[in-house]
Image 1 (cartoon, rainbow, N blue to C red):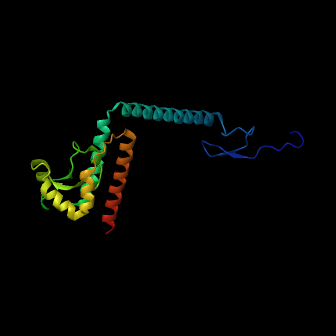
Image 2 (image 1 turned 90 degrees about the horizontal axis):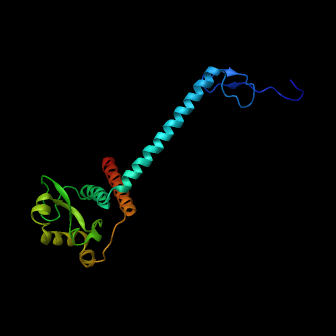
Image 3 (image 1 turned 180 degrees about the vertical axis):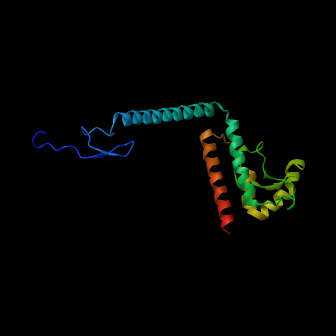
Length: 192
């Protein structure tokens, strides 16, 4: 060896973990067999990363061609799940607690006031009979809603006529918010 040059320190092989003396500072494996094994591992990892990126790109392309109504329905489902969990099994219109099914009933319908679709003051737990067969049973709904949130907030709902068009990004944010609120609500109830 030349004067002043130190031999490389022993290293641990990246494949078999054996100690070896490398010939240069870039050598990371002890033998050609380990080098082949390491190369195969690295190419497998690279291929898996590439496949994952391709799947993500494919899923993004699929999501991009779905209509806004798809995202609206997904968001409405998450919002309704939260409302039913928040209010429990009691109908705001008739007060029934032993119904077959409960819906998230809108005080002002989504057709009449789509801007209030995701407004928590506008949506409450309602038995399926009142929501479906009695067109929301609005008379008792309004009376009980005034008791629940106050006349001022009910009047604010009734006078809100500002149209709103939701974007996909906005719907994604709303859906994420209500999923998180639902998880938190369930966690709080389990802790009690």
